Length: 129
Image 1 (cartoon, rainbow, N blue to C red):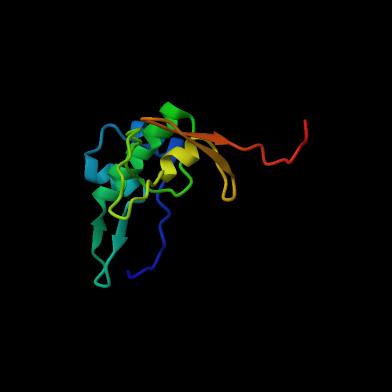
Image 2 (cartoon, rainbow, N blue to C red):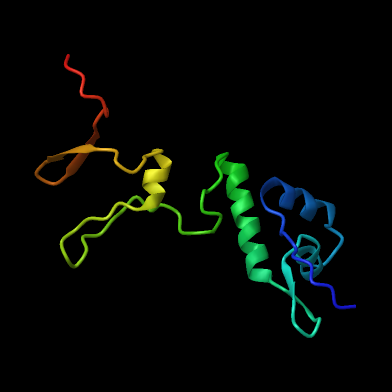
C-alpha cells in the first residue's frame, strides 16, 4: 500500500506527554510514534532521530523557561559574552534581544566608559519632561 501521508511531528508539551506515555518502547519507536519519520519513494520508513532529539531538547527548555522559541529550531544558549568582529563591530545576538523582548526599530543610547559600553533603551516616546 503506497499512501502518501504528511505526518506532523509532535512538539512541546504534546511531545513530552506522548514520550512519557510510550516509555515501554525503544527510542526509534518513540520517535516514529511522535511523527519523526518519513517514507521514501520505495515505501521505506526512515526515523529522523536528530529532529526527534532536538524537539525533545526544545520541549524541555519550554518547560523550564516557560517561553517558546519563535523560530522552532534549536540553537545555542546565550553565553553573555561577545567578541569584536574583524570589521570592528560588536554584534548582539538574537538570544539577547528575544530575552529582552526587543523589536526591530527599538533605539538605545550608547555610553562609553573606560572599560565598558553601556546601552540604555530609549522610551520610544519623545516626551518632554
